[in-house]
Every structure is written in structure tokens, then in C-alpha cells.
Image (tube, rainbow, N blue to C red; front, side):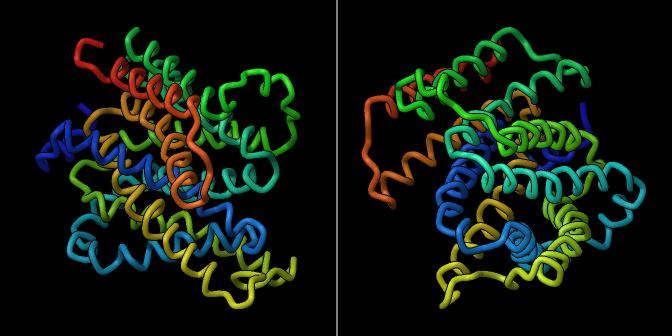
Length: 311
């Protein structure tokens, strides 16, 4: 049993609660895609990544202070593991996924980033003793088809016309980085509170994001926050991204992975385009189509197949 798994199960987190957290996590990360549509044209990439994690760290500090005194000693004995967790999950993933979003189409980004569960299973098969079962592979593939149905809007011919650019490579690499981060969570020091884990990870990521942000302001001449005037609409969007996808999203993901394992957790990432589509229909006035329902049904069946007990 991994350290992270022991820690979370000792905190009486049930399988049902873990799955609910993973669903909520997918919803928040799906909403992140919708919100990001409104800031990509006005907020520089470096500012988006930096302020997102500043907001998350500020919110985390007061609630994790009671745990930090004890947890810092534990994490100090696992410096390399914490460095890798913070570097991959906060710094590398944030920068690479935004590089993808800024340099390729939404269709390409969605398709390539949706390969994350496959990479999670591959890494689990290669690097851990918790080998994925046939049912998990089948569930991932079925859910992957459902994701492709939604992304292609029911017309798979769209994939033949995809024009691959540099952003596509970033999208694919971001999927690999997130899979690596999920594997590294199994090396989190035993007994560390999830709030402390996310907070220290955020600080490690900000060690790298801060000089990058300063460089973008001083050398590239980018604004501190946004090109938009007045700035408050972008401020609200960035605050939400910091509270939801960064703060709560990472907290729920870490706890969910600790209970169900990275292979089972990975398949829930296929819910992201489902929630993105639903939220776009509700808030952006987009239409509900039959391919949405077909894709959602395939994803739901795939998740069930991958996570059922006898899988």
C-alpha cells in the first residue's frame, strides 16, 4: 500500500467519497476550459499561470497552517519527491497546458489532452506494482471513444482535417506531465495532510512561475495582469480559476488518487469535455446535440467498466 493511500484511508475517505471528489474535480477542470476562453485574448500566458497559483496559495495558507508545523518536517525528509510533485503538477503542467491553449485549436487540445488516462495506465503498468487490468484498459478505450464523439461533434471526418502545429505537441506533453504527476503522488510522504501537500506544491511551482512572470513583464513588456480595461471581469475569472480548478481541483484530485489509485482516477478525466460541453450550453448559449448524449453515455459506461470491482 502506498504512503498516500495509507494516509487518505486512515482519514476515513470512502471509495464513494473519492469518486465524488474525482467527479467534482473533472467538473471544475472542465469549467476551467470554458472560463479560459474569456481570458486568453486579454491575459498573458505567464500572468494567467502565475496569478492562478497565487490565488490558490493565499486561500490555502490560513486553512493549512495548523498542519504545516508537523508536515514540513515530514516533507523535509522527502525533498526530492515534493520537488518533483510541485514541479510537474504546478509549474510544468500549468505552463505547458496554456502553451497548448494559446497555440492550437480547441479541437486539437481537447483530443490530445484527453489521452491523459492512457498515459496514466501506461505509466502505472511500467512503473508501479499496481498493474492495470483488462477491464480498466477496456473502460479507458470506451470512454476515449466517447470523448472523441463529443470533440468531433459526431463527425469523425474532422480528425482527418486536423492541422497539427506546435501547440499540439504541447497538448500531448501536458497529458504525459499530468500522468507523471499522478504517479508521483504515490510517493507523497506518509501522513502529510492533503492541504499541506497542495500548499507546498503551489509554493514549489511559484518558485519557477514567479521569475517567468517577472520576465514577461519586464522583458516582453506584458501588463501585470490584463490588457482589459476595466480589469474586474478578468479578475473575477482568474479568482475563480484559482479557487476552483487550482485550489479545490488539486485537493480533490490528490485525495481521490490516494484512495482509488492513479489508474482508476485517470479515467475520470474523460468527464472534463462532458462538463465543458454542459457548461458551454448553459452559460455560452451553445446547443445540445445528439452527439453530446451519445458521448456522455459512452464515457459513463467506460468509467463504470474501468472502476467496477471485478475489473
